[in-house]
Image (cartoon, rainbow, N blue to C red; front, side, top):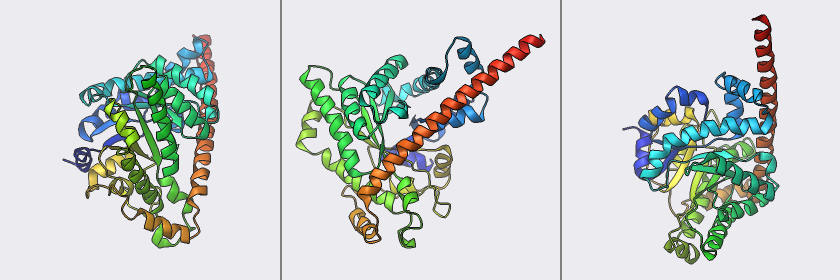
Length: 368
């Protein structure tokens, strides 16, 4: 039994923060389910950009779709849905065995819609309908416009993975949007069981303050923010508002720890997994971190429900000049900008690959 299994026994789900066609066709993803307690996965534009850029697994599919007249976003979403529906089918037994709690995969709406609530709602509904998989989340960012889109999408019955959350306050806004959507469904006589997770990005906090705080505080900010958020999560679950929803059969919006690969080469590569172990939460991690934790990670109990020393640590950062409220807003804005850049790079890559493959096919036809 490896450390991943111990986390699973603790009640934390391990999801892979990656999807490539190579992982699927090689059987590697299936092996991760079997050997490393992986019970779901997440994707984003950067992941797909790297997968399409660095392999030829997608070339034949791109060539065929171009021949059908497809391009740009339409072509990309077909590729992504092919990968993610196949992955969803792989995780379906887990989804069914856990009565829908686990076994999820995630597909993100275009990051260019981060400030367009109506556009996000439309695209989320369209993508979910096209996937036709009960265990596929649509990722919507927790921006101000995204909060509106989350409520509307939940009301429409679309399962949502709220992404790009960086603070307790941003998490609570996302949780409130989820509850409003469910409350509206109950008032309308609709099934209240629409699932959601809320993704807190962790390591980007530590990258943001690197070389700006005393060495003793290095790599402590993200964990402190996560612990403070975990306390808010636990408090929400015993609130009268939530208990009323739970009594109606609503499943809680689980916390998901994202951006948990260690960025500092001087820090342990299992830092965030060991610090963020907690029941009924999810940690989504890159392959490198997954394998490292299985090899030499340790599980030393669960994160304190009351946040432990989070407030003391955050006070030390405040004394060092870190304005966590301003930084949370900055990190979310930068996250949107980063994903938008990845999206634009991805669209440029698809256009370039499409042109190259068409030219190659035309050349081959002329030579024959």
